[in-house]
Image 1 (cartoon, one colour):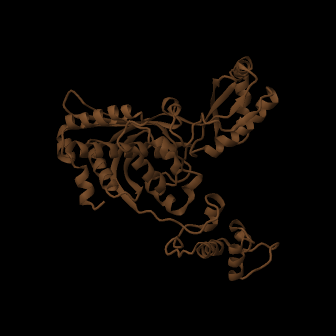
Image 2 (tube, one colour):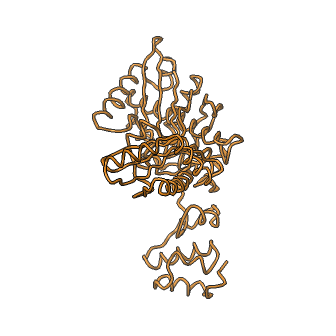
Image 3 (cartoon, one colour):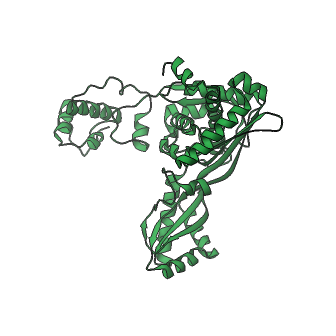
Length: 414
């Protein structure tokens, strides 16, 4: 409702004041309710830019909720087609069932291709998935006087009693988060501290930022060092980085399956030997020659489609794209396939997970909200993501081995 401290205008007057610049776009909410503010802001933009929006005003998500948590200056919503692939059988520690995969994408043939990979995996007994590490990081940067001062700082950070103080300080900011480790990295008189946390069912970037900020107060009080920036890019968030590939960020997950040679021929229309060859020449040698950080065919496609559907931070597709895909023919002539994903950053609480349409997709996977045991739902989602990426990799490498890629896109009119 309109604020009691603001004058009342009718809708036309309010639009005119926004167009003239007298009232900023962000201030419309102070004069009316959220839904009306969105509509008037849209009308103002139409008048200012000389355009006519025909679709963005049609949505069902809760404007009151998303304008508090997810968006500023809202004028409508974008719709992305949502398809289903599966079922895919997943043999994980947390995801142990058959799942239908919600994929939000505008790329034709992606859902169909992933669906074929799901079929091959399920017919082969399912994808085995395991999480090897789970930690979200934040890495502030400090400037020291010189390398001697930097060494003194690092030595202080590495003291067990210092870590316990930091852990206690971080714990005071969150009910569920826990500081796991602190790793220093030095460049001349610059020191980066990479803090790693267990964030349970939250993806955790906000949680670790707040916790790390509290630790910085401890550092300034106890050591007298003041950060140049709360984030020094050693985290590393939303950028391709070797440190994430090596040390991991979020959940480090691997998935594999062995597809019998008869199934490779029946479902993928090629042979295990050809798929091994394509994967080696393309995903491994080709990626190495290109200097890529991801050694895969199109992991980002599946990661993006799942993340958008399930309310994840879409920018974390960057880290999700750094998967390594391996394929080899075993002693029985069957095809062993695996994907290793060092940085799967997902959550089932917070962020976009509370938006109605995205929550529908999380409910489909059985991971909406916090798990009965804190952290189990986000781990379940990470295992499903890895299995889905494996399906996408198997299908695309199979299509390229069989020479079907261009034909599939042409037939589907893409």
